Image 1 (cartoon, rainbow, N blue to C red):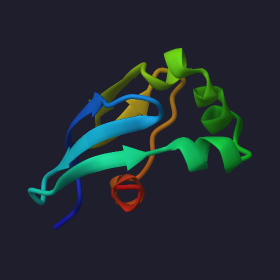
Image 2: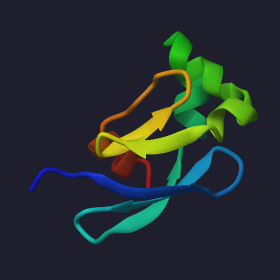
Image 3: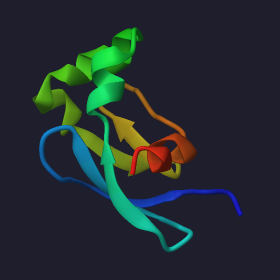
Length: 78
């Protein structure tokens, strides 16, 4: 089965509550990724207003700046 994000909602700080199509869910904590990654699109999410501006599209979380991350990576943060 290919892993998909079914739903996601902001859970405070740099955390998102995520439900996957394999019936698992959890709180993904993006704080370390955002603070340590060198990609500009990821660093832009240090601004909490930008971090909170996401939707679920194409089976994953997509931020308004165009960043999307693989569902497997998101699940590894839970």
